[in-house]
Image 1 (cartoon, one colour):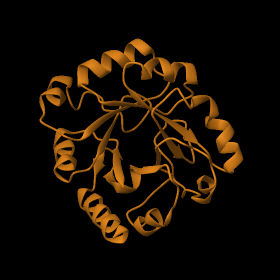
Image 2 (cartoon, one colour):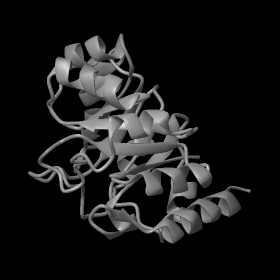
Image 3 (cartoon, one colour):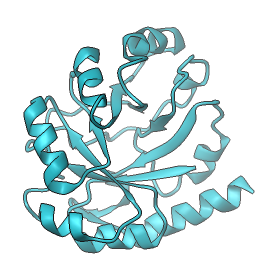
Length: 213
């Protein structure tokens, strides 16, 4: 089970996640978000760091030139789109760097999810599913309807977000889908906006491991 922690804003937290063997760290470059990096980590600092964790740049409706410049400045490994980026744009970017496309599927059933993602099949490398998009793209506040994905024919590795909390490890391990790749965690693992509760992250990781045995 892969874990992505989104909204990282300090090198200390990046290094802590790397030390815990967390697989993905999300860095938000959307200025509307309360998790916006806002120069709290420099590109030179991040590129110079000896890290195994995959660095994911999170964007919302950004221009191609801005994305590519940020990839170069920060040495990003992966891009996540959380806006209304069309399949054609995702495909263009994916020729340069691997792409996660986020879909907000609140209230959708399996057939509607299949239809929603169909045109993105050859446009990106991963999907992420969430439930509710705020105007400031700060994340969700309600729980995820796990049954919505159970019968969907996704056929691509995907992350599930949707308000996963430190108490949801058992629910995560009960979920079954052949393409379920990982969880995308953010606001429920924060002490405050922009500061993660690393003890909760570590506990969640350990519980996932124990429940998966």
